[in-house]
Length: 250
Length: 335
Image 1 (tube, rainbow over the protein chains, first blue to last red):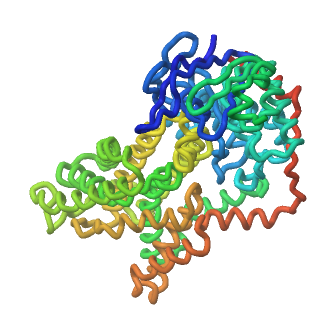
Image 2: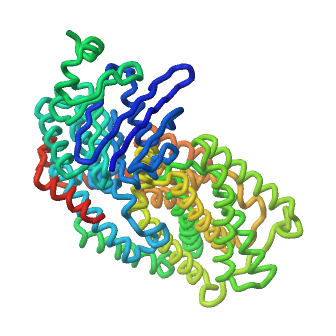
Image 3: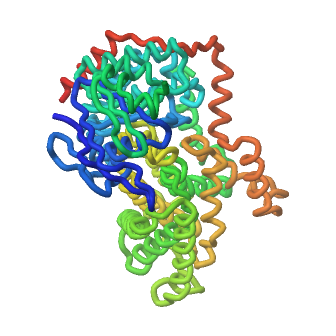
């Protein structure tokens, strides 16, 4: 029961972005992924969620090789993600954006939808209920009917998380979720991540904000120029001389 | 507006449209209304392609032409029942849409538009060259609808009913999961993928649907024209359909509908505008793109917002963790 990268290598032209990197994300744990700019964090996240194909090694979920599965197939297997720069649908409401996350649970096809058959209304009721609960849960009660382009930055980040959770994921990959948040909002984010862990979701946390990562993670992996330099508990990683040298600074 | 107010407004509009033959005054206005409805049958379907999934098809006039010839040849030359001929025209154009979309919908926006342009030009050449089938440049006389739709009022009602049906179908698609998926395809393909929307298949599905409505529209259009030649389906018409949607606003249904009505009726009702011809369309398009790039539909939305009382808007995110835990647990239990 895990989402894992096994000895992954990824090259862009002559540049090796990742070399023999392994990482395992288990349900119910928060796994921090840190490293300087250009160390390959987002590349690894794109490999796990299916936007890139590895040049070597494999991506496995529950021991099944999914290296060549599309992004959509991985979504069906329970892998959700957010983006470094929130990618919302600006002309739709906050509720509609969250409901989009339930796409794979809508059973009505195009023709049944066009004729508004009972299944469509059942889907709609179920997805609306789910999305509303999640929006209240992540703290967007005040904005449910608002157009997404009217949201402030922090609201956009939390809406992306709600959309990801509406996918009923087993694993959620968060790409710099604390970026641009105030200290108070980061506290809220930490609490929300805590709830995800408690609910048995595996959370991969790609972040620059190292204090935050060390505080909320169960395990931390540190990357530098495409290689893992340290992997372990937050305390082990924090004290590692190599990590201090390349990343944390003396 | 409250739901009751909306229903009332809808009923009033419907009553006005149904009773149009009694108060329109002259046959010409009735013909014009029927023409608008026939255009809308095509534009309503095309709206899902252009306005929702964001695929810029400018070649739907080619599908309109195929639908019109299919209907005329089946109902006229072969004497098949016009009802069956309408459905056959839709079916043939759905197939054409499938065959055209299969290679071209994988292309990025601009190249897709060029592919649909090429398609329209090819169809125009074929209808001109296949003299035995289409009558070539001489054209074909189109049979009318059978009783009780053989009067101008009857024809209008039939076309109005089909237009209303198309509106209802597209409305259903737009406001449910499919509509959200299509908007995701338009605004952020990356997001669409992330939540599991099969991007290409979604685009192809609505394109085939728009092919069907374009074919049906072709049949209705042909009947209103009563005589068709390849010149009936000039390329300008394809651009006109496209412009109706852009002026109406992407991601709306009412907007493009208003666009269709205004762009069809204004040049006919106001003689000086007719003289301007394409210049008028160009001017209107320019005005909309510069002043309200989101189209007429967005203007309506903003006006409605003005009518509502303004509240002080909060932006404070305050999670309710117990509720979140319950919501996630419920999702897990659903399996």
